[in-house]
Amino acid sequence: MTGIVSLQDIIYAMDFGTDQFHSYLNKETGEIITITEEEINAIQNKDDWNNFPYWQQEALVSSKKVFDSSHFLPLPSKFDIHEYAIMEQFCYSADDPKVSNELSNLIGGSGAFGRFKDAIHRFGIEEDWYKCRDQALKEIAVEWLESNEISFSSADKGDED
Image (cartoon, rainbow, N blue to C red; front, side, top):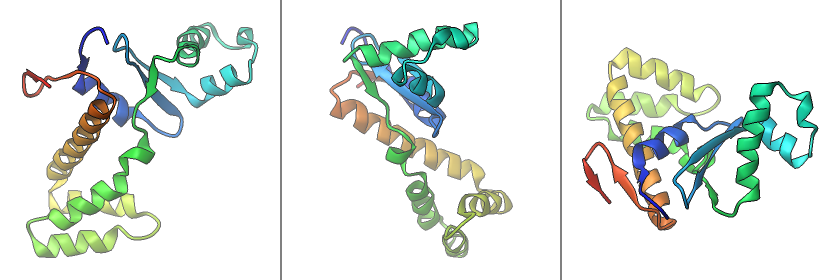
């Protein structure tokens, strides 16, 4: 690859990913392209791009590069990130056993994420949660970059890995 990828850019793109948005890294240039599910469908179905607004036609041109090149790798998706597992790990790592127990009880079943968010605000530990989540995303990104043999820089450490 020519150049070094920014770890922060990878983490940001991973964090941005949803069911509707998917990010890809060009392993040759370091370019990250985020495309929508609608754009993927339009490209795969060979839809007439003239039926799309101008701004989306430009996005389709950029998105098509992902499918026309073997240089693009999909970044870890929400399915690779397992936010529930991160949330569960955070619950068990709480210093206060009462908080840990209550959080652990709240994350089961439907509505777990909402109950969890309410609880971390009620306990005043939302900053701890976001630090834990950010660290987990960083670890996933580093593991992904290393497994794909991609050089990266860690801006927060000021060093290159």
